[in-house]
Image (cartoon, rainbow, N blue to C red; front, side):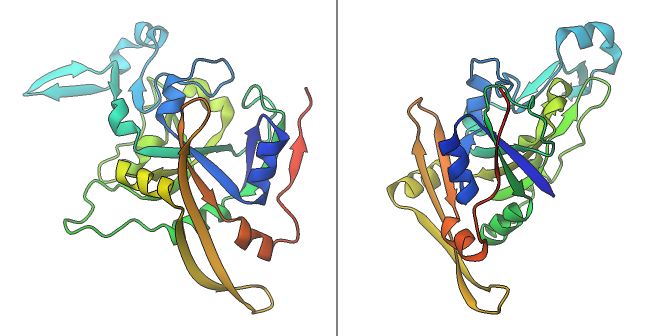
Length: 248
């Protein structure tokens, strides 16, 4: 499936086009103060705006504690928990209005995320994985409102990074996410982590398939992971992915 990454500068577009993908911590989008469409204070939560609550109070989801039921206006993951997630956000539509302040669009394909998932499998833990977390995942964002609650995530905790209120549905967002520990972040910052396997090109020639993962903090203080597959991509593609300049 074709995907579209919207970015503000041609330099960033060039990095993405050659195979360098920067995943920002999900808490960034909760804390951003801007009007471009990236900021969402309710990121990582199930929250309903006042106008919905006032209009459809009986449609609120019902929770219970020690046998006492109550209506849930907002259920939120805390920042410490949510900071485990690093996301790369794209759109399944090429609309120029998806994200404000972006002057360039890079065409991608979900195949690249399948490739990352192959090289970044979820580790097998001694106690199994009853919560259903994933080291790397990718999927469309699920949009909800008070009359259309998100699906239950029992045994599929990785989906908690993929829900947003319906007021953002115009973005038609698709995400890839990594769920990591602070120790992993520090380790990737000290020295790029290398994931590799062997593959073949269309002519049957052997290829060293390599993915580099590094971490850092940008000039504004936001943490990120950078997934670099440029060496492998240049070996199998005749040119970088397509970049389109958007009309101002």
